[in-house]
Length: 404
Ligand code: ADP
Ligand code: ASP
Ligand code: MG
Image (spheres, rainbow, N blue to C red):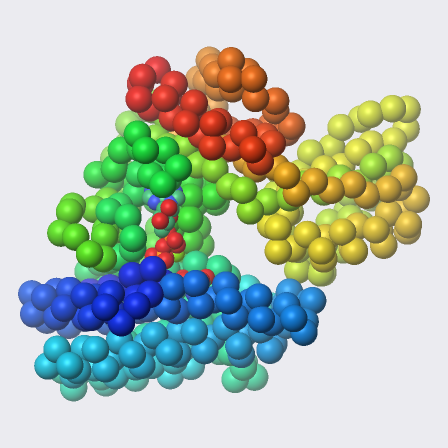
């Protein structure tokens, strides 16, 4: 019998009314496909609210009790959705991350899946029922709950689809698919019929929050076809698949992210081992840095600048101040009033006119570039927070609407 995984995000189950609509959608799919595993996120902004509550008492970001707390969000939504499915006349059973057999290691709040034993899910399926799985959560070797990073229900869904050899993983959300830019920010954004794993992963890591980047990476590794569509309409969505080999270049999408802050270590002595000290300390503190840039400023000293997620800024500043004293750097500066905007497309680096056109488009709007970086699939500029939306609209117009 065919098997599919259906994942519903927080806004899709934010109210009892929406949950009832989701239950009737599941019923329809279940009748068509035969076996269905449902993965669900916490209702609405529950995770944000719980994290805010945690901050009343705890400043550490990788703390056991934070995971104990935030996991209750998914616990609520799974139980409620199972009840809503029963009301639809279906057999359903809710399962926590532990009961579903998802194991993880690594730090609390940012665990990495290292195995799935889906026997409970298989038993429920064999009983003709629908397992309703709490996304975002797993257990570590001690039996503690560990969550899988923000947006981690996408990862739970893809991991289960891989472990159960499902024919597809459907991600149902509050937009009708993956667009050429965030449709809430860029009204001219167009829905894509399909996108390659690698481009989607790049979009996600550049801030397009429609899919968690790690989930797309896992989908590619295990060849899970992912379909992203609306929870509430029948509109055709977007397939994330392995794309045919072709050489023609296209800017596929524009992404932006304002959940970042810049940290700079100023006047770092220009001797071997300094960057190693800084990033070793950040890594030990569980702080991920991106867009790392070092420039030779004056004489024998450098500045090292990088971006962190806003929620890691406090930790990053404390760590950098300690290290600055140790390595005799001149100081630490930070800026929260920034954001990044990226263009994404396979083959970007083999087209030298692309960065030139990108920077010219931003300059023509009077937007100042604070940092610039590129990968094989994208070019990213850091700009003032107030300019992010204008920058995204401008780049979308130049590279996608005008198709240049
Ligand atoms: P869920 O709660 O279903 O997981 P998310 O809020 O995590 O939903 O992701 C959906 C949101 O992603 C949309 O509401 C949209 O604003 C945002 N988004 C950002 N970039 C894109 C894009 N390129 N295409 C579609 N949605 C995007
Ligand atoms: N509820 C979690 C979060 O808000 C997981 C998810 O929604 O995917 O990050
Ligand atoms: Mg999400």
